[in-house]
Length: 173
Picture 1 (cartoon, one colour):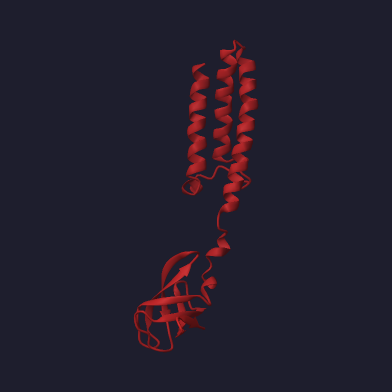
Picture 2: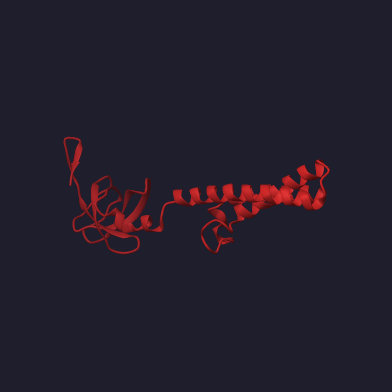
């Protein structure tokens, strides 16, 4: 019985850690297939089920073999649920191609550090729903607080911008 309790406790810890801290534990990638079948969460679910089913069987007076078989059935069911949750969480993640700076072209920004024509400055743009500050180069001088539009990506963290004209409280691009 003690072995089943320890197995269930280890399984619950693994299940919670791998489901809740999935992004942090990407370096500990147990699932080489990417399907979630061999993930840490599925292993935790399997161990939890083996432990819980074994405790139930032992409490009913069953032999070790039948208690373990019940635990294995319950463990496979919990592991299947863990795989389904793992796949659901993976589907909700933002794909790598979404992080391309090319998506900044056409977005508006606010100059936070002005510059002379052809020199570098800083502009704050909204990127994937969050503000991000990137370096910019502009063909015209820009001052702090100027509204600009990103026209092209010049490097890994440098964009080309042009001033945006405010018209009646709105911007005209």
